[in-house]
Image (cartoon, rainbow over the protein chains, first blue to last red):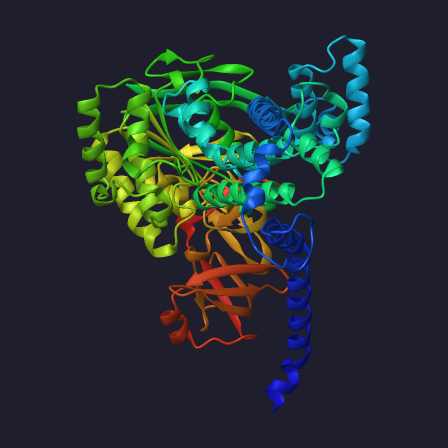
Length: 271
Length: 358
């Protein structure tokens, strides 16, 4: 009996922690589940709980204006931004971790700052800049805007990978006769794989569903998926966007869980 | 024939001089240990030989050819890191093969070489495993095979046994020595562990403050050190502050603490000189009975006894409060039946007395 007495405070503490954890999980998942349920609603208006179930809104996705071309642009922008930013991030993170130079702390903070800046401000700054240089409303200016937005993510994950990497691995490669380039290619890069993949995925996903920056940079035929979804919502009340969002969540979940299973990217990003 | 020569190597890092005119000459096939406390420059010396550090002055010659300015990958030096630095994403065989691949060695021949060297370290059965799944001792051997398969001119070992537990250390010590002799590769071992240095190397170089203080064969260095810090670093010592009492035709007579008095064959001193007399704890013996006036004895009381397994350490305090250490076998201590506070005399073995200038 004495035993249970002494362990009582711990068990109350544990209960509170698990309650908070469940609440947080519910808070995070509720909108997703709600969206999925609404997407299966047969009625013309969004209502909860639904009276009848149907897949009809999934077939209606094609009727969202320009959804095909907008999604294609979103994919092409996200892919290009993710590839370019990951490549740039390799250089930046190597410079930050391997070399000492004046202004290093400032550069690091600067490169990581887009994460903390209000996106509307970034969007306004970008469009003013692009108008000034006469390059506004082009695919390239949209790409550069998205690169500014996402470059911090691969830098972050690669900084983690590089800090975790054993520095004597490269020296071992050099002492075994590898040139600097070959030791980077055969030893360093494979060690950075989890950071590269998670950084790439972060960059891709954050670019893909960005609204607040894109809204300043698109016009006319140049439009992205989130913009068109938002336009549709402002004019229609049916659950088609919910159907689209549900599909999107399923695809992303599959990609992330595959990447996690193979490269443990989630555990990596937490470090 | 010389395998490796270091001539007046000086290295500055971040405005601080790390190495001061290091000179070292190693015969082909010889195994030399660089021994010293952390910060003495031994690792810097190793990294200079490997080519990761370029000295501000001096020359490094391998088989007579200077390799100043050559990058590490052009030096043909086999390096075994303290943490082994095995490539985690490659199998054991791929790790060993790496150096051969970088040298664009014939593929067919490489496969045979990898197998041969893994057999040599008795690890051919784990060829296709990843390093993470190996034990510490196995990783050490893979690292060794990887460094040796490229037939290096020089093999550099950085604290090779530091990460292994006691039993494995003893076993690897023997294996390492056999392998080194069998292949006849010129080897440098960097270590702070005196036992590792004394047992593995043909010669030991003791380093202090960025330079080699003394170099010699293990036993000579241990028994007849020329410097008192070398003596102290290698196995510990007692130092007695002595005065030259008289100069005689057959030597000088020294007096020291605890009524210590000895006649040594030495004629470099004059009356009144102060000298330090060093003696190792194992070259002291304890006497309890009668003959308290024996020459070269220190009188004192037993301060404390410390059990150290194979040996017993006895701390003896003289009347002026100085403490001396004697290492004797627990059996002989039992026979003496001494206990704390008891008055005894310590007899110093005259042949092992070392005289240093103060």
